[in-house]
Amino acid sequence: MSILQKFLISFGFLFLLIQLLFLVPEQVEVHELSKEGVSSRDSSPEQIMTGVRLFEKKADKEDWELTAKTAEAFASAENWKLYDVGIIFYGKEMDYNVTSNEAEVNTTSMNIKVLGDIKMKTSNDYEFQTEYLNYISNNRELDSPTRTKLITPVDKNGSRMRLEADKIVASLDENQALAYGNVYAQKKEKKSDVIIRSDRATFHMDTHSAQFMNSVKINYHTSLMEGPLASLKFDQAQNTLTELVMSGGSVLKDNNRFATAETMSIQFLKDLFLLTGNPRVIQSGDELIGNEILLLNGGKQIQVKGAKAQIEDLIGK
Image (cartoon, rainbow, N blue to C red):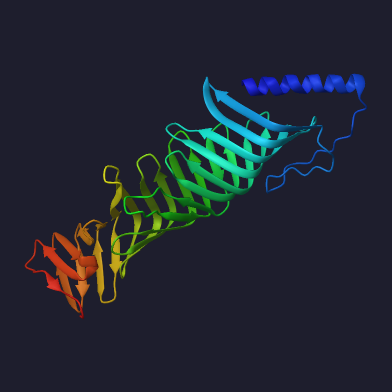
């Protein structure tokens, strides 16, 4: 049992004893939590506190720390309601700073529901925006079950990836954010915006790499790539996105081009597409096959390696 739980139990016993000896008890009606996570109570709180600070530890390590302008406690309920809230969740390698209008703390499970205009920022500058956030104490996860925005840190060019999904779960012990449902991500690169759509995505917030899974579609320049899995590679030394690799069998479509390959990658620093693993390109009625096929200058030029082909300027074809 944590220090906070022991304190709250002792406080509850003392409060009830004083009430029995000196006060006429009030009738308190308790309702189940609504789907939105807000407790519906018609009665007044038994205790109102201001300038509240709470903290929780696990195995002598800080789990979270909470401050609130106002808190309400109900003698017959396990939840405390708090207003104008700031919470620090302590992750394995980074902290998560959350601000919101309202929160509830379950004094038994130590789960926390956060509501309102929620803003969360990690100590390495990932940002989250949502209206509802659950902290699951046993799993040490922050679960946002509504449409949520995730924004990556600024790279050396001042650009950030902006992602939205129907649900995002951040694992404090894994340094990961998992996105589910209608994932949409966009980032401005030097030569073109890159747009990614998928069913799921995983961001590794310690290394800034990411994977997009299931029905992945990528737009870059005028090309559309489709496949089951795409991986973002980030160079931490250069503080820039270097490559986006689509694997598991991929298709590329353009205005006058159709291509297939086991693996396709966008190399952002060179502004080219690289096709490997039985690559094949059909363009203007011609079929090109080789060991590797490169689409240079954003796809305006083509080079086939392992076949008799020269770099050909395709502008205007």
